[in-house]
Image (cartoon, rainbow, N blue to C red; front, side):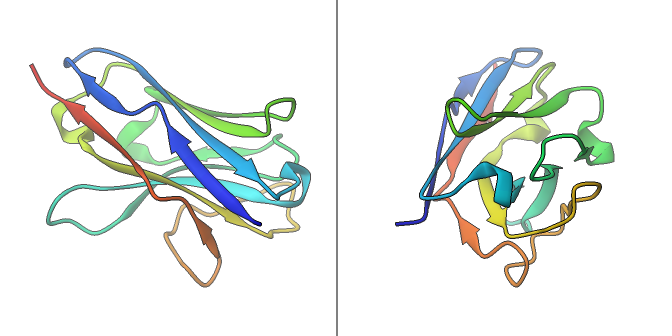
Length: 129
């Protein structure tokens, strides 16, 4: 069964850090690109970062550049999102998604369910003092 499960969310103070993890079961990470997305209350889902199937190319959206790093851990079969210097506007439900994307040089941060066909249930991140 193909499944993505996010973990690592929680309540953190502004300026703090969190590491989110996306556990992929039933997938070979070498076959998929993975994206992280977020959705705040009343807002549309937006892309945060993505990583290609070979892990050599990543993309991070401008709003979080310098504060977020995406990485793959093939041994654990996870894709992690390290977030630092968190701000209240980072508060959202964070989702990971998988796409069977043959490219090793590019990935997409568009939350296109026609491209990212597998989605996790999300993990809540709240940044507040």
